[in-house]
Length: 143
Image (cartoon, rainbow, N blue to C red; front, top):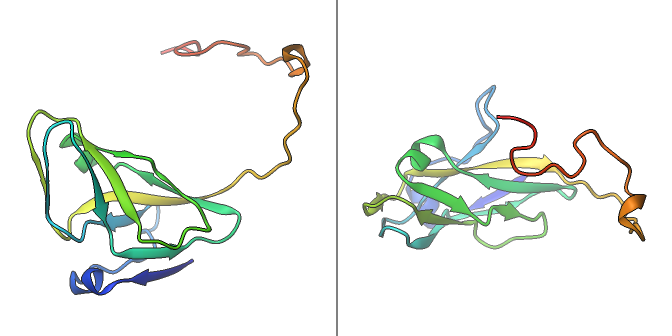
């Protein structure tokens, strides 16, 4: 994977490096200060442009410490063809304004393979193979 860091990101002295042994995600940092009012959304800049290898996708996920402060990631799919700056769309679900400072870890990026099989359309619902779960939805597999 190739990564370009813009000047503002480099000035923060926050390297983009592989996760530590046993960790799944790459840390993503905000490069600007930002106040996020309750129930408001913001696109936080990271200063990164990433070349994800073909056949893979980047998934942006919450960091537990940021989520516990009320901030939640939205719209977290980064396609391998995207070369623009990585921006993290977040919403403040807390009742207080959240202050994000430049250099704070805001999310994590997990790179995973993409399922790219050819799609076969079934003409009837009955043509789908049965499974143990069947049509069981929300909560059907237990608590």
